[in-house]
Image 1 (cartoon, helix red, strand yellow):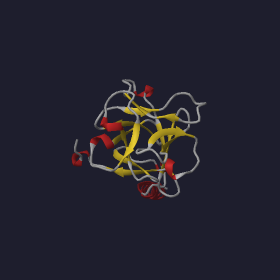
Image 2: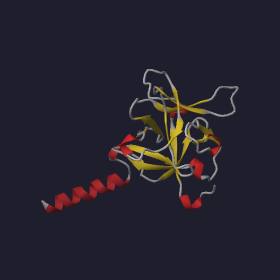
Image 3: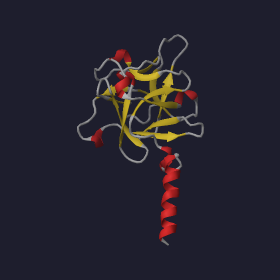
Image 4: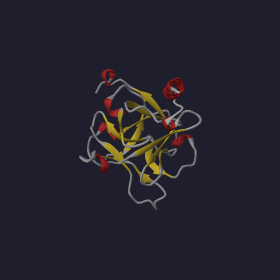
Length: 176
């Protein structure tokens, strides 16, 4: 019986390290979050640390303002903290709006009050990032006449604008 239990544990650990368990949740560490369609990274506009600053996409750089720490907040759920501003982001609490702009806000002192984002690994290896309260997903919106993509939350439509790549980053290698 002990051998069977040990083998079961070893098998489970082997599968766990390869992402077969826990819904393929990302590791709680630091990432740059890249949009699949636009291939640019999430950051506060102009690296501004003011509350209410829109979250936008920007070409990749090894900058702290483009890097987010995923802090565990439940199964496959995280609070996101920007390494440069020390803040997070949220969308409007109006769940009836078809889409809501995502803006930078302070992290709450009580982590239970900070926005929580659900990371769901998709079959293609990318992630869907959903607001835990509304269920709407991070979406990059850019019209032909705009120079930057704005980030909104919108209903899931399985589009590349709604898919995200997590690029693990070592904070020691970042500037600004």
